[in-house]
Picture 1 (cartoon, rainbow, N blue to C red):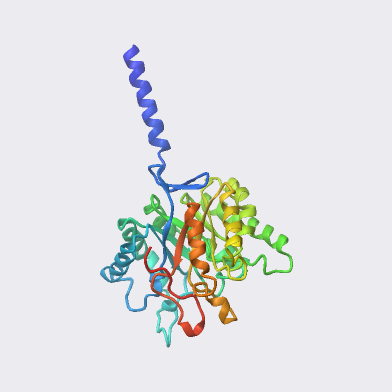
Picture 2: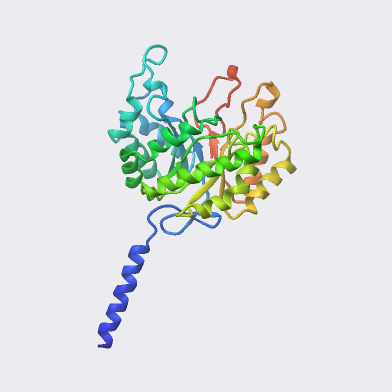
Length: 339
């Protein structure tokens, strides 16, 4: 009888561990942890593979060569900008792109995007899939679009299948640099709107079965870290999975352009009990004045940001591996080719 009881107890313990086994990346306190419970500090790049015009994403060998080069930097993560149907040049017919409508959506439904993500995982990199609909999401405040098109994308059956297939290693970056808070006449009111809409979106995705970590960008083109951190703990508690990553994009020339200001911003992150990363760090940023573009030669801001982030074990992702605007456009230029 005693032996039978012992065997039963062992079986129950084994069953408990089997059912409670972590099967996605999971935020625990301030740390992102693997399915084996190991702490991960993200060190990687943003890479818009979909905008690599010299390859077809139908051609696995072609895109795998590019992913191999990203892996060769030593990156452990790659943030992959993506677009909803009709929002990328590959979908737009006529010159100069000569795209074909439905192409990007086809990459989801035919499994190519899932294969791209799986290949990143095979190269020991955590894929972070991010929606970058530039006309409606990046630096915009179009809440109707966010609450319909973006959330419909993440809860589409094909996307849910993709997430489930790669769930052990995948992070979702819900909407790139969305909303404006500091840049409005009523920042406090807009921050409540930001929190309320994001909480609703996260709840909808969780109810649809999305259990992987969800990354939330700071508003104001990703720059407003203080505002995001002021609501981050509450948002993470509201999430039924408590599995949120909070991200700021360190284009801080007009926000935190000195060592002491950078230290203040990163200390805020360090003193808040959430998982926080710098989702984009670069040598340059957008700006109407030439001086605002140079985070490299003016004040050497980006090395300061990286040094201070690394000393606090705060993860970061360089913008970008090989793709960006031309220098004449004064846009963000390729940065930090080596990790």
